[in-house]
Length: 216
Image 1: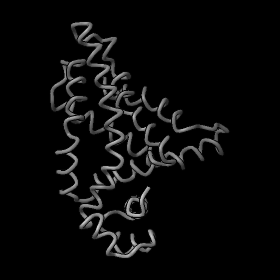
Image 2: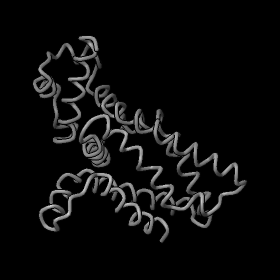
Image 3: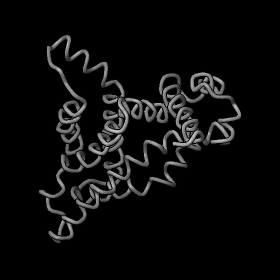
Image 4: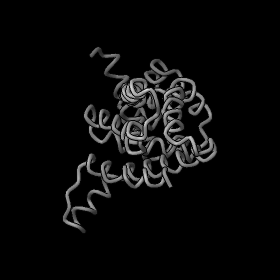
């Protein structure tokens, strides 16, 4: 990795941690440069603006996540093409949710605590007004969510578009909240219930709960 690439990575590492901890509005570029131990000119050189830095922070997570999700959706679509119909076996809710969630483990394998940080950032994006980020993510990655939604519509044609929108919203909200605090929840599980849980265990336990809500 070149010096420029190393500097850029340090800025992104510092920014994602601070954005997750404090939010976008409350985190200044000077705070980021202080943690990354670089000067302000480095941020301007690599990113140009705070908005671009926020987008690049999300892009680093989403590029890996969507690569995994696209691969899994392609596998499901191939199964459907072979069956010639949207069979309940091929498109049950658990299968669709596993396709949505399992690519998160790719992030965790690349960088420890990535799932927790990514979910906290998504929670911040939900709660704070970041119109530029919403537009950026929709324009660059929105097609992936559209593909997922279309598969869900095929599996449950009795649900209206309005019902699907809200059920996906509730599902994502539960997913984000749980995984954002997964480290603390796993500590509680170990101390109070004497049960050690890996992040994979949390996801496995969450899927049936989310699926029940989606199918209700």
